[in-house]
Image (cartoon, rainbow, N blue to C red; front, side, top):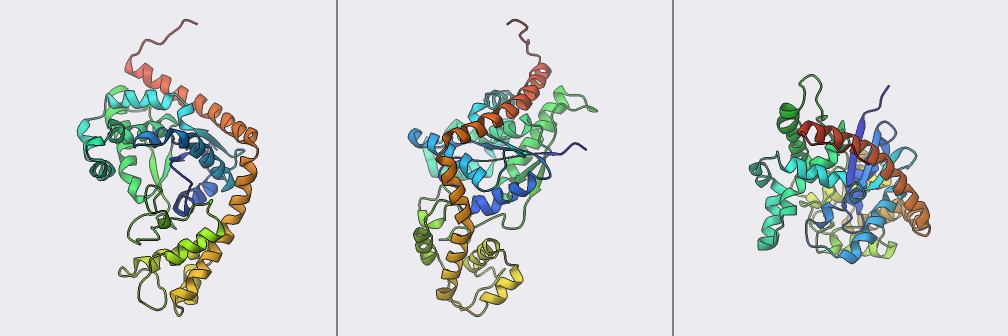
Length: 339
């Protein structure tokens, strides 16, 4: 029986953090056993905001290595770099030409980031969701693992595929583009900032104490957990809207320790922050130690990582180019027959 296809990716804008791992990559590791999985380092998305060119290459390699270190198996999935597949950029342009501008202007993330950037906001940031749609549609993905904050972007990809392309260029009985469905991972899907339990943990947060990266040293992890925002209450609990930090830190502890929520809540309901924070720090350090060991070994052998990315790009190119040719034919482009 043919496996359904899944596509995922993370921007190389710095070291992956607990939110990336617990909310996304940890689940991809399980999905690769059941689905045909494509995982890319979305470096084209990383330049939609001002970036340091000197860091982009290193961050790209670091992200790819962390994918593998976290358990993504090149024998079970295809790991590649987005910019190594020209079809992403080409399809983005084609989709731009059939996507209404007002669809883009109402995207929530664009509005939020545009406010921060002011007059320096780029067309690339506005167009980010179309590139994301191209990423997904190129691989004819059946499912896309997304958090709540990405559902709007996936809905845009679905609308472009169905309303703007298939209905205009395709056959109703045999659509050219597959309309992807969201795969919402609820357990740990949204890990919040250590400095604000109501905002998502993010690599773009200027406060480095707001996140724990997968490459942080044990000493740095203890320091960040010690500084993590808390409240005045004794004992921790899940689900209390007035205690977002308690809910977030308790959820992290439950996941990294491998303990059930009921067990964790019983264990921590009658202890203070001073006793809980060392428990949390130890659990995090213990959980990411194997990742760091595997990561460091992989970075010492650049040939192995290059081979993984090369093989992943070959598989991604075959599938994406096949889809792109179908799309260009549907658009009516003259297809070259010369060598």
